[in-house]
Structure formats: structure tokens, C-alpha cells
Figure (tube, rainbow, N blue to C red):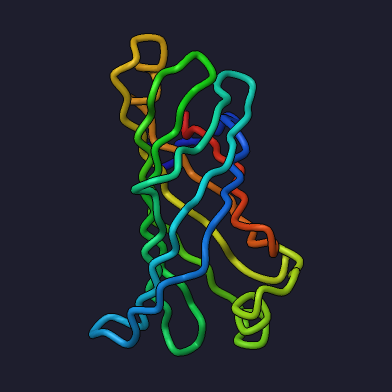
Length: 156
């Protein structure tokens, strides 16, 4: 009973997003709010692959003065077989202020220089994808100039 239980993961897919210019809401009671429209993208893995649908997809970012970013992302994924998947995740991107400034300017930054992690949940009515409804996933992110990229892992 004193030994910690192991944590096992299984790679689900790589999620690559395309985004539009952020809508700068401005300073709010919980940080500077930026709404980033997601315009599309893809996901591909050993069990599921498909496209990210535009329209209604977005990233509500709250940015602290030091550049630490809190994510609240909602997406609709269309699996290659046609099933729709609602994907929602929260996350954190943080690092030294100089690194966060470079990311904020859209520069290419080595992902090893900052912390970018997400907690992911899925919902679907597609019978062949119902297994997604019963898992929690985590993402390891990076922010190249072309848009966010995440490697998503199921927690087993």
C-alpha cells in the first residue's frame, strides 16, 4: 500500500492546429485574455486520424504578466471514418520570461526551453470511437510559428 501505483501511457495521436490572429480582449481580472480562432488542422495516430474542423473551435488564452499562459481549448475533430469527436483541453505553457517573449513574437523556440502540457478529454457518439469517452489523456505541446502541435497520450 505504500508503493506508488505506476502511471502508464499510450500514444494516441499528433494534433497539429492552424490558427488565425489572436483577438486581444485585453487585461481582465484573471490576466490578459486572448481568443485564438482555430482554423483547422489534422490529427494522426495508430488508432485514430482525421481533421480538425474550423468554425466554433478556439483557444481562450489567459496570459500572466510573466508570459505564463493558461489554455482553454475546444475543438471538433472529424475522424477519417466520419465520426465526430468533441475535444476539450486545459493546459499550461510556461518558461523563462525571455523564452515566453520569443514565443509571443512567433519565433521558433526549442520545446525543451519551456513547459507546455495539457489535460485532454473527449466526447463522441460514434460507436466505433466510444472508447475515447472512457479515458483521460495528456498532451505534450510545442508552439512552432506554423501553429500549436501536441503529442496526445492516453493515461492507462
